[in-house]
Length: 621
Image 1 (cartoon, rainbow, N blue to C red):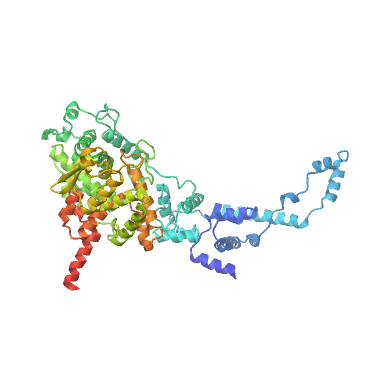
Image 2 (cartoon, rainbow, N blue to C red):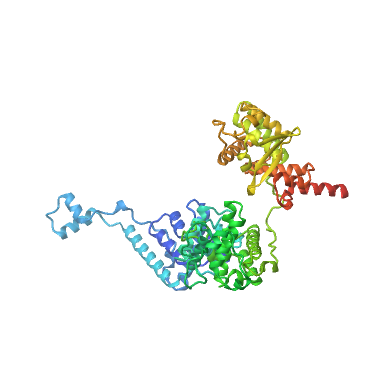
């Protein structure tokens, strides 16, 4: 009765019979423990429950028995029959060894055989079991050769994989074997976006898929594309002081001349102002030089230059694959590149990052988020605009297309990296209670209160010196060297000034030290007051003290989880959010935080939404 129930459930799931199922039964017949055999051939975890394992075993036995009956094999009853192999210790010793041990070497072979048979009478049950097991293995082997199905890409996953794994996969849209195969071939942490699938289950899935389709899970890389992309990216990243070297040519399959580095271009730095008559002579080698000139002229930091090189390297590779250059790119090509960013081809992707010269390098490490797509288009469009202004290109095709990529539908617009007021109060209060006995806790209180009122970036805080504070008309100002190597003057409001005074007093200093000891760091190591704290130490200290502050508090669990994720940058968001909540105008907050675009300041959505809700309540509440 139970067996038929399993068979009915299995039939509904459209399960198929493969060679691995018969290999599993052969392993059981040969004495392999059931859990080990299921883990090896069925993709089951050795720690799966006994009920799930018994259900899978019975379903396989039913299908194999039905197959044997359809083929008219009378031995079908042997399938699934538990026949224990004869124990190793129950085997009688060989005749020669037994004769030597008994001192019977002088007896003839016939006499020894007769005496050995009398000493070790045959176990009829063991002989019968041995014959049954041999017939069982012979039947399974014949069925495997004649009737086992191969797994094919268009088969459903639940036809080949355990039910408990298929539920998680199919809930994420992985319905067919080909869907899972594409993920596994991408490599890296391909399971990261699948709920209830961790590294262990992912390894079992990949191993079982390899059992079903040997060799299919090997990542399929477009080797020529990777080599070409590495060459282009290396050419773009080459320092300006390097001598010219080997670099990609104009098109795949063509000769690869070295990239030209004209002396005039090198001397001028951005010297691509050419006469219109020479615009038709552009090729990919010249495009690489032009892109390098734009990066050199526009990148404000090494990190920005790295991002620019990555985006332009991808775009030039895209053009190269279409046998195009910057000067021959049109609006249709721009739209095609946007389509590629929205659906990155599998052979352009490797799910783990690799150094530029590594053979596993690929242009992308996975699908791009809408924000990353938008950033890529902005970078490429800005480069085109600059090259048009430099008279390197006759026009900018990106101005002819709609470059809006839209927002991520799954993005949480209410998410905030600012501390909620009630959470902030609890954290500060608990740290203040520890500040009298813990110098590190006192420094953390200063950090929280000072950054909440000033909105400094972590790099600006760590780079600040006492000499950067300037009094002016009774107020205290702080000059910082911020993002983009731009200077910014920040007013030190009352809360920040009081926290600063306590912080200086704990170090044996006061506001007179601004002039007396201008080189001292604002945030110093506890054991070396003359040495600035590093970002890693700042991050680690903040994590440690936040954990201590929220541990044992009566905050809701969700607030504790959110606070545990906080980084020093959260304090900057807290400053902007709190200022907007308290009615500070948007332009003032933007100037305080050093935002070049007011839209950046407006992203502090929690404060903005609260103000909108308050105004609407006044009108319609």
